Length: 271
Image (cartoon, rainbow, N blue to C red; front, side, top):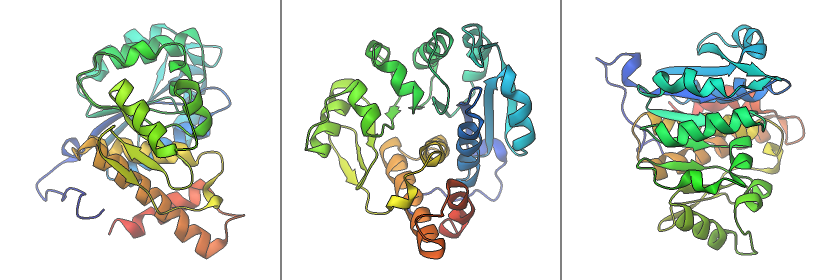
């Protein structure tokens, strides 16, 4: 994994190490945005921009020091459809976009997802509620010229694809049908673009807690945004995420460990 990560240019600056846009969070789900943003920063992103509904902006701005947090038009604690227009100019300079963590499902969040998938000229990672929104709108995945990465757990996977006993075959089939990279979470997480397939061997049941997937999504966004080929970036993110979880399980046990603990041990893996 470390051999795949790009060297840090000694003459580089923050703009050289990935500009990442995160569209995450809603009323009641501010932790999802926090974990995604910090996961991206811990995996080397140079600039992390977090756009949240205006009603939770104050919460996220207090929680987060390093990311650039900005408010977006809000309706009932989620993105208003007008947020799509507000984001259009920001998309132009991004190296990767993550959308979905704790975002909620509404007409406004669907409008934002549709705009991002149509107009982002960079890889887009779709997680959590972003995947749930695709259930009746799979056409949004068609025609993209840049990588699209789907990161479902098994429940989310069943909303957009057919999951049989052969998890690997199911993931390969969905990736092939949609032209995406699919990371199917669970024991022995599977990562595939429909041709090549990686199986992750790190991780443990202590990671099965709310927020763990948000952390992973942010990590993947950072690695993709730094220019690592998307399939390998997703596989590296899964391995690092699981390895951090294994350190936590060894040191504090599977019952007590938290996603924030995994965040704290990530630097040990990235020396």
